[in-house]
Length: 508
Ligand code: XMP
Image (cartoon, rainbow, N blue to C red; front, side, top):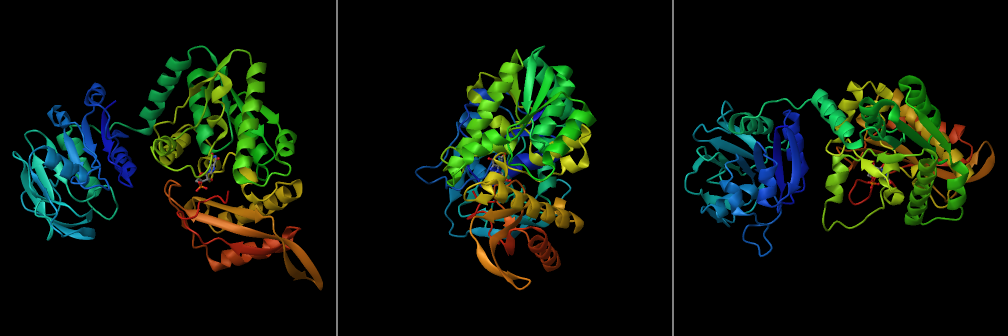
């Protein structure tokens, strides 16, 4: 598979570069900046991209690379910090000019190089830098500039080394994708062959090779990730896959029925439905601390899978729907732990089962394309994410049957109205939260003392950051009226207007 590797120097949106390259139908992966050169060469990439980064090449802790990388004969594009690093490693000059550029900037192309082939000579681009290249290394030609950056683009066409100060990966550089395409198709000689069909073919082959004739189990939650993983594995090994759907009692209204219908009836994939409500809920009695809840639920999943694995003699493999964003996120070396995230498949590492992770290199939107191609029904392809610990982390305080009933009913109304308003797909997530506090209200002529429901709706690209959704007042009005009137035990509805960061999407 033709691959372009992105060396990550810690820019906030390094993964966007890989995404844009993939959108051009060339497979791309993010790797740490200090991956040894021989490891990089062994992967035989068609091209390399050096990402931006927060540091200055002059900083004591500046991230560096082995300059041997420039001798590999592989085309390289340095973006922002990546360009400055290339410049200082190859003998050019990077200076503290005192002229920072942030935001939209006018870029002028002085001589038609490869990166801007067939593109306007003057165009807007997105800048975010303090240091500037003032003298390109020997062999390079400066082909573009801005008012503050004398060398905003540089090219050594002989060695196929390119540098660009602005960020082609962000939408604020309108010709950004065209610039990347010129690099991919002109410099790296890639062809746009990485498609949904090729993803499916490649992963089916890889799954067959990994599991052979063995039995495989898959923890199926009904979300798009685990469902797609299950369909891929089923296509690869058929009847040797057995899906396990654990109902932990923390699911939304009608959720179990939908999953069973889709997999058992529609796809005819062997599915074990484990009714484990009692097992989970009894362990949660009296527990209010969020991390304790998560740990207990995680632990119970392990135990449930162990039981199932024992019953299904010979199952050696476990499928899980880990996504590329999970891999990137857990690869952050010094990231503080905010929450013990887990999904069904993410847990049973001590189960003596080998993991099968067919989506490990795929982003969420790509998973949705694969899911559609595999025939997953539209309503499952476009299901909003739902956390493994379920409603337990949306009840702030102890989880009880009564609170679960209230939250389920309120959430059902919100979903119904969000869909009716045509907003379901536009939102990353929309859900209700029930804090275990009560307030006074009046209904008919009587006093009420009941729970509030909080509406949480966010827009997001990948859940790493999120903004609160500006839901129309009319929708909020209907939802509020319906929840208060139809859900016994609620007398107030509030709206969460916090973005992530500093808040998180879920409340616990
Ligand atoms: P936060 O709350 O950290 O959530 O902003 C980011 C995204 O992750 C989902 N989430 C989870 N998904 N297991 C999962 O599979 C979990 O334990 C878990 N916790 C949060 C959350 O719904 C949001 O989409």
